[in-house]
Image (tube, rainbow, N blue to C red; front, side, top):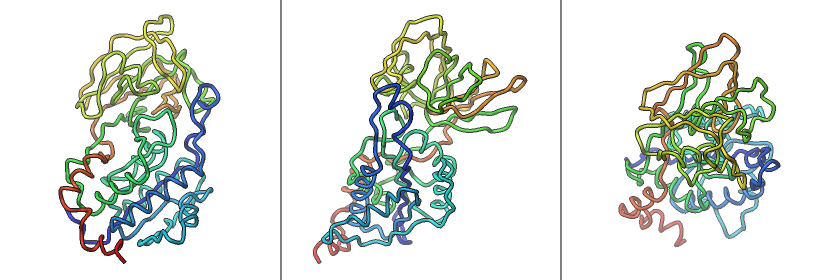
Length: 343
């Protein structure tokens, strides 16, 4: 559907992504904030060139978007309004969630995220129906894409202006964690039960404490615990089911790419298919549940827990399909856009 109101795109760039402990215990790439500035600059130029009228962005302590704008060449004019969201910063992962809620309230037609699985998990909590176009800024990610910023901007512009087509956006799967019957948190890719009462580093890479894993998806070309499912019984992003497996530290029958350059032997049970709406009980308890690779939810003695699979995750843009549909609909030859470039 074509947008009658001014087309708005949101940008949430996490300055903390790409820097966790897996850069020390494995060989993950350190993704610095200056490179995020460069990506955002290309996103903005593409959005401007497609006729998007407004960009709202999450402010951050590094000033990623502001620096992207300030570093433009004089010849690279931006034909759009760019403004920070009016929000109180916490310098925690809550900023991503709060920014997503503000963008949904402001009527954004698409949100471009720069971050990893954890960043997008926080955005997914409050973005509502606004489609996400997630750009990966790390190496231990499954949810976001490795995507050139220009292409991301073009696809986001097509989505925000109604040229991408309904089949270019899909509703993703999600895992919902319940503690004593109350929603505790969500995951977009996997939830892993760790037989360890200590949070320590939030990032997860050691398989010794893993006892159970629940997945929305997992393929052999993924990295992280999702790669383990991929070597057993792959589940794709579009399959209307998930899976869970039991993990046995006394056995070593499968090798998985748990982190960049880190292949570890893991003992597993045969994967069990999970249908949408199905739940599994969390065991053992006490434990910690890691969500999308980060320790998040603690269960104490006497707690009850379960993990449910559903398709209530965020809407996600398929950039290739969005642009293919936009080409067929004349997106790149509109008179108002040509006028911008022929001035």
